[in-house]
Length: 407
View (tube, rainbow, N blue to C red):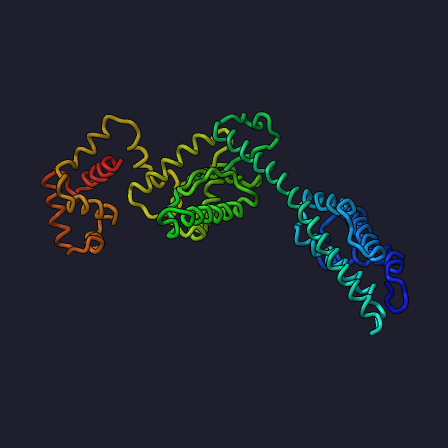
């Protein structure tokens, strides 16, 4: 095949060294990911695969037939290497298309009306080669990423399991795996409500649940700057977010991190499109099991005591937490409100009055009654239980009794 009176294949082959340098230069200037590669790699491995592909292009033209599977092996190997290095697939495919476009400029240089038949055949060969290259490179890249992702996921799973089981000594690693834990973790317990699309059963509900979880994980991964260690299902679970090495010591670090953690939980709730309760504390690897148990209790208490969705810590529910410890006083505290059994309006009034900070007008608005009705009901509570909401000491007992009754 000839263009402008010259055989195309030999002309392309002769120009491979110079064309390869031009392609490599454009990769460096037009694709940021290639500009970030080490110079020796760009001028070595990358330049080599560019030259090999351009020579393959010349072979295809001279033989007038597409390459066989064996002739694409080097391109597949290169794609696997780029996958290991974390070069995005779209950048790799763009590089191949860029090289093909520049090769086509060489092929069509000086073409005139009399070259139309040969140009049509050349164009068909070019498109076919690009199709085969795209298929071979994409397949090899995705195969390599699948292996790497499986290894990475397995490593994270092994580390998470070891942390939850308390099997990592200070400064150590989980047995049989080389992934080192972070110096400390923000331990999160999450309780997720259902997304509206999860209503009902069947594929739609299951898909909605998986999409909800994926969006939550994306937010957690963005906070961590890497895949977070998570054990989550549609109702919630546990997440361990590595604390940056330069973070303050754990006690002060928890305070420093709190605004960011609160923002992350809000973002996760927005992304999930569902109600989200969470609790967090910072722990060293050896303290993760206790932190997981404690944050789980904090989340449960926040939900049981009628608090709004959001992020909580132990200090937010200290009274409730302490009152739920095993004690002979707990059932007796709960029994103080037994005279209100059968009078739900009185119990609801006490709960709302306490929740509203002893503001009778706010409580009345929440209960949709007149403030005088709140006063009357509180007097009835005092008559039945012997505990007056107007007395500071009795009010503290009423609050503790409410907590004991809930738990």
